[in-house]
Length: 440
Image (cartoon, rainbow, N blue to C red):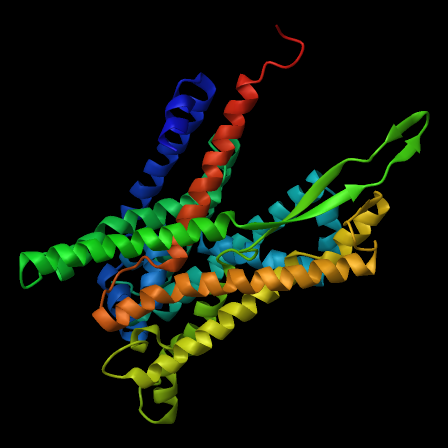
């Protein structure tokens, strides 16, 4: 990876793209520290701690926004509205024929969907900022709760989210690519020093003796390294389905007869199942708290099963049952999201039209059934690996009270984006170094 970056810096145009990307990341981190005027930043942190506890979804938000949400900075909403709107558009593409037709129109259709996604992002940002400014403004979020300050907060939060979306698009166009993903990754990476400092103080410097501290440090390094290896394997793992194209006569020429393959990724749905499962389980907790429910009883006990802070706790092991529900949801959403983004029947029909077939499998519906069977098998393997990466942080947080913001979700995003970005840089280097067969 470092060799690729060194070689990229030797090329003037790639060097400009890397430096432009770095400059945009500096702007993002600066905006994440810039507070909104008239806001009490301590209110959000204390409110989230009361609503969700010190870990769980509060750590999730802290990681995805690079700490800007808890600080209530200009970029407090960050790119979470854009991520949500992108997921919504993917789901609507399946349900609305007009959007599905746009998706099939190639580059022009893709541009229209991107434009709609931008409008949905601004709309979500307005709704979320208004809910925060109005809902929490009178309870302590705003130092002076009045219409002018409410409008100011809504405008700043919405503009901050839209500006980050614009920065992501600029990095995609003028930088190294993967703009929105890189914005998300820099937010997650910005929290890692604090997390590792917390682990060091808790388990290494706070150990009873030097030997115990060294052992704790080695265990932490081994766990993080092991999870990174698993994520790399999940991200790179594919099942290649061989495809053979029949020979046919076009004019006076014989074409076809070549072979290729369909790469089916093991982790087809990426990190989406973990995000869906976490959000769904935290939703009743947030709604109950916002409605002012602070009582005890059956409902309060049921909410503890959904709260990640109670999972794997040695004091209350019964609430770990909630983690089993989480595992089931992750596996379910892995199948669900793959089913709406990957259509075996469409692929089988396209292969049939182009004269392609899988050796030993008849074209048409048998090919579709075969792809579905293989896909279901590898989805289960990928979902199990994804689940393992997702629950390991919960186990250590519950057993050892390791309260950190990064977890399996963060590692998957970091590793996948870094590897994809390196591939894009390498491909751009390859294009610039390729002389062609006409040159000497």
